[in-house]
Image 1 (cartoon, rainbow, N blue to C red):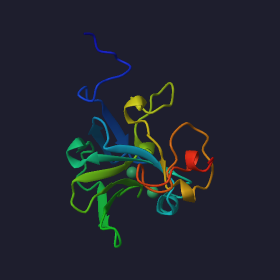
Image 2 (cartoon, rainbow, N blue to C red):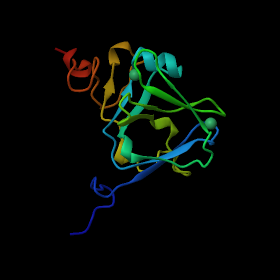
Image 3 (cartoon, rainbow, N blue to C red):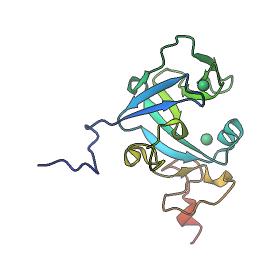
Length: 165
Ligand SMILES: [Zn+2]
Ligand SMILES: [Zn+2]
């Protein structure tokens, strides 16, 4: 049976290249993320100065650093969450956040490489977000077809359907 190139199976691992604002820190991740969501929480809003952030979680084994400078990164554990925040030493942009146990990475879709012609993140269908979380604290309404969760995906109230009752 022929594979459908527009709908690859998870076993057909796509890899994603990403870099910081200045490009001195870079990495690649392999395969499908554990989850991919738009987060509207106030923490993301304040840290990133943005209404919402595209967040992807990956198993730590999926990430490989691509920059060659061993001193390219700074890391500091967040005093409240224990997650380790990795920044580029040159541009100070956040490159990724590592879980306290070191078993997963929280990454930002905005750092992923885009197709030069379309401007869309390469292999977008593979990592497309499945919903909006912490939509209760949104700074703007988003009129797409994705589920909107009050807090966590799947376990909190759905705001896009429940409010019509
Ligand atoms: Zn940088
Ligand atoms: Zn958030």
